[in-house]
Length: 283
Image (tube, rainbow, N blue to C red):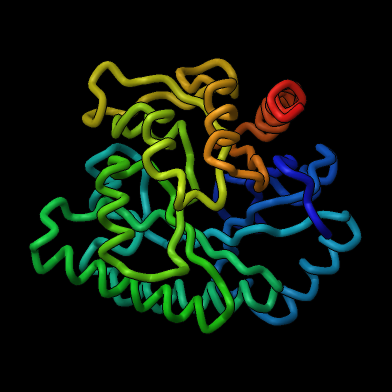
């Protein structure tokens, strides 16, 4: 299936994570999804075949499989620093091994992209810890490359400038960005539109999500809100995506799985807003 420029997508999950179920994606009528990886016991050949069969029946294309790990917590910004992604030293080796397994599962699904939050990268580029994180990133990229895959890093936990340094230091041709404008606001790491312009040449996938600034940016969380209700200027966001030449899916993410009906309603609202803006900006 060939997706049209800026076709709509939604973030989904099978048995874990923050996304909607695949059946909801079908109800919403979106042509593509990103998938939060299932737990280890769900990453089997049989499970992959079942999921692929559903995708075929529903006419939906899988564009990225996102990694996630036990023990991660987004309770607050300091907890994120201690628990998220490949950065925490105590879990680094085990999580690299798991991301390689996720890459192998993604290959079974016929998908050419894996994504993740790498974590809060050490700020001192000359430090041993930074160099170790760069090395583990290279190992993941090399494994993904052997599976014919790109690795997309989701924005939020670092400034645009720091993310650029990180990608350039890793020196891997299959390392790119999944840009989430709301995360820049939620984490307090920078205004999303200037950040998108700065890193745009590495952006290969995006999230459409909205949020409001904390009164203490970078210290306490901002607040995620329905698309169009927050501090991400969605018209400016899409106009900037056009400016940088992005033509991939617009994948909606709304992280309220504890309220599935509200989640579905707000994603439906988001599809309407994006379709309207897509028509106005692309034509």
